[in-house]
Length: 156
Ligand SMILES: [Fe+2]
Ligand SMILES: [Fe+2]
Image (cartoon, rainbow, N blue to C red; front, side, top):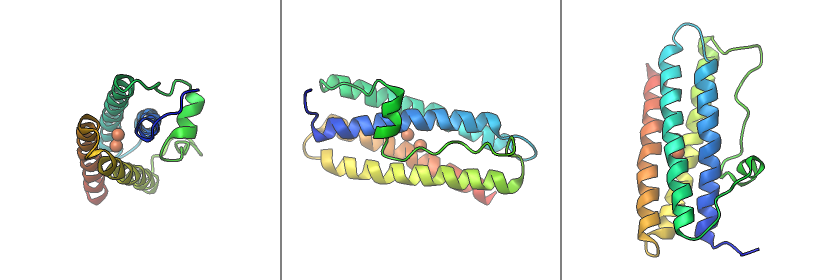
């Protein structure tokens, strides 16, 4: 098996994490219910779309660089830069304010670990791979925006 360069490995870690994040946000957008959950459901659905876009971009870049994008669901969990946590489902749909707040906190944890990962990847590619660098910076800006929207919701 061809050994992957560090950047390709990082891009695959990003792809795996983004696919899982897209799935998880979609899932959470569908299971939240009850009073005050509409805004949260909409935001989770919107973020799911954003993460899916990131997955598309990273997959494209991996192929451009001659790498092989992760192709098995098992690998998504193994290679994601962030450990996968199952969406909450105990006791049915989260509907109480406390449950919803816990979901937002949990989403924020993911966004912050994404920001850290992309900051490191941006530093690593800044002087060696300007195209990947730009892609990572654009993603970083999206993740930061998602973080801000989640924080705003938390404070509302
Ligand atoms: Fe993302
Ligand atoms: Fe995100």
